[in-house]
Length: 117
Image (cartoon, rainbow, N blue to C red; front, side, top):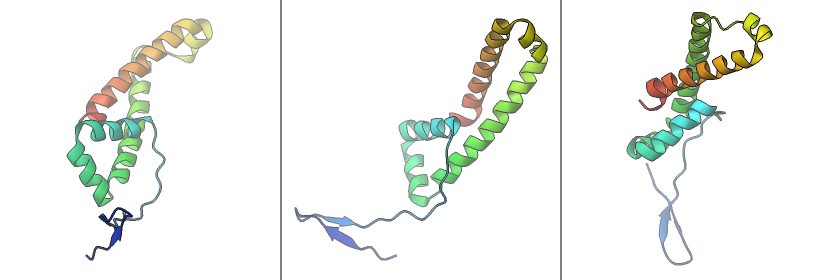
């Protein structure tokens, strides 16, 4: 691998580093949470993955997996707690409260299992 350098007006030589070409990923909430966690708490892993070009595919995979698990956990909790469309039609406020509770619990499970692990 051959490095080339640029010289700044002050006389400093800076290597011309170019990251490998990667497909563009649109990250959702969970992918962005994972990125923030790695950047703030696992700086070595973050830097290594960024420099090797593995960061964005990793974040996209975490985001997709987390979204799939979130949907599955949410559906299972809704069934277990009898949160149905009938409840929504009869008492919207109770349905909203239960759904918010279910979503928050599902997100906490995802954070513990995938984001902060």
